[in-house]
Amino acid sequence: MKKTRVCELLCIEYPIIQGGMSLIANAELAAAVSNAGGLGIISPNAGEHDWGKVEGNLRSQIRKAKSLTDKPFGVNFPIPVLGQDRSLLDIAIEEGIPVVTTGAGSPALHTSYLQEHGVRVLHLVASVKHAKGAEKSGVDAVIAEGYESGGINSPDELTTFILVPQVVDAVSIPVIAAGGICDARGLVAALALGAEGVQMGTVFIATQECIADQDYKDAIVAANDTATIITGRGSMPIRGLKSELITQGQQIAETDIAPRQMICGAVAGMINEIVSAGDVVRNIVEGYDRIVAGL
Amino acid sequence: MKKTRICELLGIEYPIIQGGMTWIANAELAAAVSSAGGLGLISPNASMRLEDDLLANLRSQIRTAKRLTDKPFGVNLVVQIPGIEDLIGVVIEEGIKVVTTSAGNPAIYTPLLKEAGMTVLHLVASVRQARSAERSGVDAVIAEGYEAGGHNGLDEIPTLVLVPQVVDAVSIPVVAAGGIADARGFAAALALGAEGVQMGTRFIATHECIAHGNFKDGIINATDTGTMVTGRRLAPTRGLKNDFLAKVAEMEQQGATAEELFAFIGFAPSRIGQLKGEMQEGELYCGAISGMISEITSAGDVVRNIADGYSGVVASLR
Image (tube, rainbow over all chains, first blue to last red; front, side, top):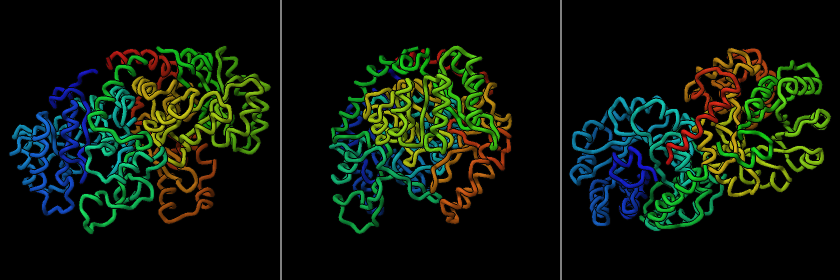
């Protein structure tokens, strides 16, 4: 398939990024995606509900991933969990992480610091205004994430289909499309809209390598087109599976954290089996040329 | 540009359909789209006053369009409105060959329309509705996502995830709608497996559309965050943000019932907004794509720009 600026920027073969999902974007998943030619991303709290232990957890996740792949992989840092504190970023820098994704806060806060230490920064945006702001802050690329995506959403509720081309028109740095993508059709559509890569979350939950609970994976595989819902409109909109209140990682740690919604993207209805994360990447790559040839 | 089953089915050059928007899908607009190689659609109430005769209006709109084009065009029928049988009668008498149907059970009128020799495209917003439409014998489905202006499906499924799931669920052709305004959106829709697109908002901002100039200007001035969805207790409806929708949202927040909302919204505000240009008092049905629409062009140019741009978009994917 086509090489884009995102491939060059991240030194990867295919412009396919695995989202750094809170609690469940673990080293084994990220390494498998990177080994297949995409970019895996680790979440600092993968497999660890106790935020007090996040520093040690991040370091051990990074080292674990390094032991599993010699390809580049990244770490996701939601800005609200960092605040002004750079100790987690310093761990990523010390461990030689080449790329981080940031989101849910001002990209002006840490972008130059990371870049001064040789780290590429991809920032998550959900509107044209935020994309322009991120470009001004000097980020290397933006991830334009639509309303289809699982988890916390922007109150603007712009869908991927309309968000991506408008962000592409507004900035000159590369744009990565996220939200509602899980197969080769979605990747081709995203590139037709002007994106130079995709980030996918939900489809990577339903993989053998992901640390998510088996019930959670099964629920994604069983979901249909109407299975997800937005809750929390007016405060913090979150997309997840309807009427399921369970802990995301019951099996990982039998802690007493508050029950939370089973986070899941609107694309769940298209995910019908649990495969290896490498196969997710390979299936998309194989399908790409066939779909473009059909246009 | 690639020919799809939709081109064959409708006898058109490009699989580009202009939505039959209430109040504003007029004969001149439909004829211009059809003359450019797409499929224009007329709304039975296009340009009329509330007190006018709907049947006479539809007949006159159809006859005007016939004078303006010798290409096929169609009529959009909202099948749950009172008097639908009479509207179908006019459509049959006037020899219309294509109808789009929406907002109702396709099993009720599809057999009648098919018997009259018409091609029927039914609007769906979920996989279940698409399967049911196929069973009812419609020729194609229009899978309309949450991006669309006006009334939306209850499930709020966006185009990017709705279209491929509908394509996988039915064997009849699928037309993508909601969020499309240019060659990029058209190519993306075809990548998802659609065999054509339907666009509404893009065709409002054209010279031929009878919508008020204020409304057209409102669309071209809109940004990416210019629309919102309200009315979730009735039917989720997308429009340009204004005082009217702010009031609806406020009523909803205060717990207004469906009856109270219906009494406030009714039908008149959408007419005065779209035909009379009452930008704050009126209801302005508008798709989420409006932020990408930046000029008023001819409807024919909308079709031609997409047809011309398509091969460039596809070439960039190789």
